[in-house]
Length: 280
Image 1 (cartoon, one colour):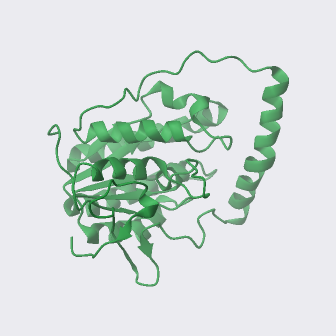
Image 2 (spheres, one colour):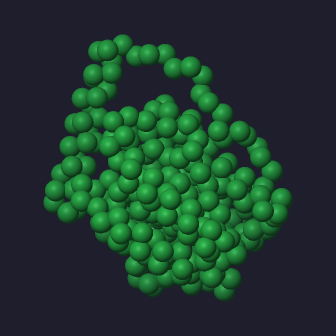
């Protein structure tokens, strides 16, 4: 990548990882790595435009149907696509179908942007990770192949041991903390050829082993508040994303829209940006 390249527009596609859970702001909304990256890119480029179309719980088929055409229509400089991991966590997963849908997404997106960015997603160390690791690695191998075929960039978050550290994961054990999202934003920033600001791969200080009782209490709280509801949604065919649209997608108009920072001011939070004309 060209060092210190300039980017005027960015569209983010995916599920809860890209929506920003669990990087919660004081008003209860989510920020996440994509918003953090957009803010940093906007600080370098006047008139920068951004659209986050990601929705929690979405499977790769839903991303292809609902988000890919909307992103392609915007024709941005940069598109990030992170999807398929929710599929691999389902008890019954047709990996052939997941690979085919991911291929379809990349074939539509690559010609519609200057830089398509794919990711090998991180996973929290633990028994769940070990159970689904073979599927995840099959997904990541296909991502690498697609990147080679279509000239896409790959951010290897899976290959960074620090992003498996449970301390960078929220209490639901499914989503990164704010500190984890900051590391992902830095990883994508560097992949786009921009000067490093931090070492996103640097390990955390040695962990203090919690007491047995503390660990069991945390396990019970996790099961009651997060695991049981997650299993319930799987059994009933529901999703946490049902009825939701991406932050910058208008269901009424049937299209995505750009947001841009206030003119002449520092970018600030993406939630304070205004809608821009769709002529870019």
